Length: 320
Image 1 (tube, rainbow, N blue to C red):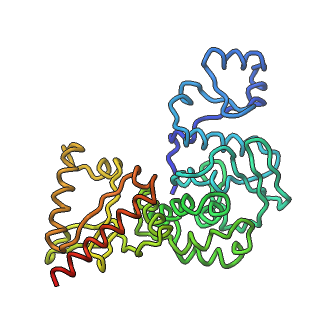
Image 2 (cartoon, rainbow, N blue to C red):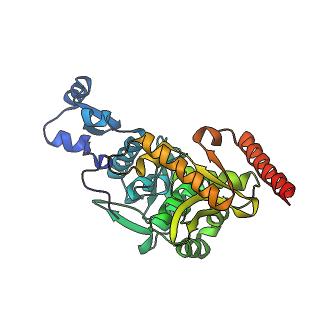
């Protein structure tokens, strides 16, 4: 999968050396920056100031990463966190201060301001081309992220890549077992691989799955299907059938993504409520909806879920 050539992350970058050859001087470039015509994603690299101003922080990080790759004095590929945006993946929870590159000459990497060079053996299938530069392949990117990011944010990347079919669970496990199990800072990688699930559809769902694991709550079934005869009524984000409850992550993107033609977000909310009522009618289960705010207070959320499980259990015992 290639991001389109007009994607903001592929914003044109002009290096100082190239601009000087075209007749610019350091003084004229500084003046262009002051006038608001040019901006500098990093020292020695220039972009259109108007276009730069429209970019999100994640898009700016991708542009900085490309500038680092172009300015490198040895052959490198964009790797770890810096490869994620060029597979169109999510950067939630990733540290965006440093650009990560892996040297192709096998020599020891070094860390400088804003750049972390890595040394690693690169197989042919570890590298893919994205337009005119190279990045870590999806499987390697997931495993690299697990060495520089938290388990939670690495899981977000893993689930996204798995869900979109960029990599398979088997490929991740095989690549890890071959050599990456012995990488430095890879102690959290087995947890990422154990939790990774191609059924998870969003950042919010990945974070919910990790929250349930960290809170020692029952393991859920993602994308659990509810049928009424031959009609598929719903796919539940997370079902706990043995406890008679299900969990839904409510993010704004969720409603926007599934809007039907001519439908407003308010219409989608009403439709979702009717869907919830139908599921409850068919199963007798109770629903708990989670938001970003809930995930920010995991102890309180875990207590709510345990209380709901106990409430359902009490009601079941009374009914018996």
